[in-house]
Image (cartoon, rainbow, N blue to C red; front, side):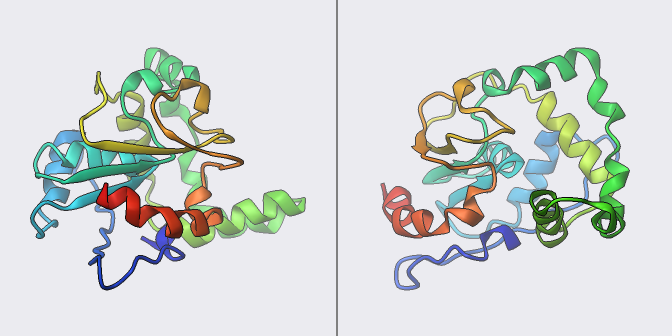
Length: 203
């Protein structure tokens, strides 16, 4: 939830509930994880908002809830919007070789980074990567690469940055395009979101 720290919606119109990530069970399917997470949603007809893999998760959660709207940011609506490298990873299983264990040593990594841009990126990881468990990260990557969603769901709003390098916009269809928006624009473009989210949520 820390990535939403700069997002502020009018208190007289919205009641915001943050959902923390849970550790998945061994070999747990995304559908089962989404069902468990959906049990934490207690309000009727909620608006579900997710960023990146969280956008995939809220779409899966919507299958167990009755959301009035789904809003995804810096994410994908179906497996066809995944970039070619992720499709290749699915075919070759190369994603299982990623050294996700390095995330646990991000403090150590920060001591050896060189350059202002890289230092800023490591600082972002330290601040916003709330779950650094290798099993969790391996699971998230595997679930994303192997996501089976064929078509975009109804009642979904997709907000995407034109400079997103994780999910390049040339693969994305039917979205609200944000000029100069990166994968982390929920943080850097928070003023845009605070201005436009109320209208987007209310339709």
